[in-house]
Image 1 (tube, rainbow, N blue to C red):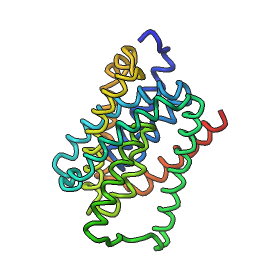
Image 2: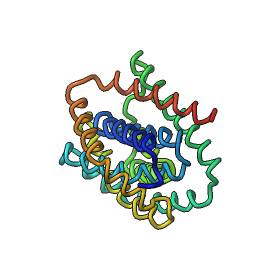
Image 3: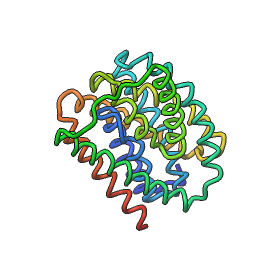
Image 4: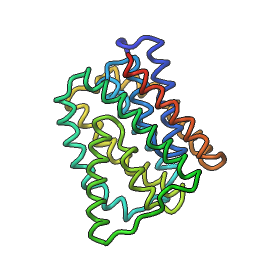
Length: 255
């Protein structure tokens, strides 16, 4: 881990711990919290590479925490187009310069947090949209589109949760099913992304060694997140997380 100083290792540990808590408690925002946080210190594509193995470990904990609480039918429809999205995302990463990449991370962080904060405020006032009815053909079409976009966004900027939450909030019957489906979906994608990132060189030996060293912190964060999901108000916790993401996004744009 010669490429990382102690303060950098502490920052990574804090970032992955927070991300694991978010993933296993509210289900959305883990990746879009992790990447901008790491991009405050590391080059954006190195931050992207650091995030993939860390999130995969968190996903494994999440699969254990939400075992069989996911929607198998939705996953069967979502994963195939999402795999295509991963390959498209890899091509985008190879073409985008670091400076543009960092700017995009900041913009997406701000848009993600603003959208969900506004949605929470509207639901609180009773103005949120209910579930939308669609024909069978339209549902299958939307599933393919959202699966593909979720895979691409997850690969390029770890922001697949932003896409998938919009889709699954219309589908999941309860918070356990919602989080469980998200966790399993991204467990599959992050496994694929890990191999793809290794192939294009944004995951290095030092990166993998660092993530392996802090894996107990990720596992602890996963169990803490599951505890919060069962016992505390998700709405308040989600608002706090979204505000943190928004502030980080602003900081990236001003950096």
